Image (cartoon, rainbow, N blue to C red; front, side):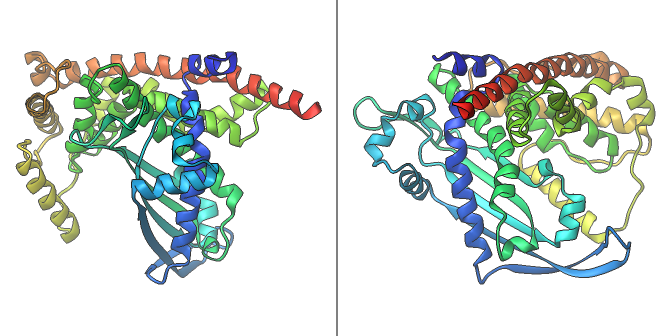
Length: 410
């Protein structure tokens, strides 16, 4: 491994991800351009306040979507690289991360330009998810010694200004998409490494915690949403993905000094997330815990009903609105305990051989302070790791910038 690549890996940014960034960027840009030319764009009325005058403006938003099969994706990659498939499969960079036939789905939401420029930060302009099914994800032989990594799916939701319907700002598109791509491709790369090492694709106990953040949402308790968000943020694979995301944010901002690095870092979503983990305080959280007021909103009632059916189908505890915050917390902790055991059993039936979540201690089932204090300590410890990794990036970013400047002078 070259010195530069080694430095990248040490700093927590997988060099192998770099190889795929431009391919994904160009393909997603092409898919977005295709959506802008579609005759099937959906329209919806929307109102917003003019950021300069405060005047209420009636306008229209648009939505379009498209998808690309894995075979189509690889065909486009071949066109971009200029190689035939055999040559591409033998490329050392591909072999470092042999992502093959990933399915891509893209949805683009177009908002009025004034609203987009005022309310949508670069890190909020793209939402994405990397997913896979246990039955499909694997390393597969493909002629000779070639091993490919199959069974991956990527979903993207891009928030764009309406002006892009006529002409996409390609430079801005690249800047908003690359940090998110780095994030999701890091997830895929870590899964590949686990399979390569002979492990399953699951991330141990953190898999169960991740499931809990997705399946145990409950709008009847506003602070519970905050707590689940922190559980998600403190997972090791989420921290790693955000470090890669931060790396590409630094590259976008053309950072060249320590001062510039710290300025971009402290304005980033990553720094905000570190502070959320750092600042979590059990007593403050428990004392501020509330039960949402009863509402007769029809749509919320329908959503609750949908969530109840989903939980029932998956054997998870029902959603219940308790009368007091204390009762609400005890209900949520009990539901947490039962749900994690359900996830354990489900994964065991699926052939999972890693570590399982243990039962919540009896004391924690009866004392919310004890339950949340356990997580406070985890959040603070992971915040230290998160911050250390973020700060260590400065050496990599500034070193690369110096090397680029040397090349420019030659």
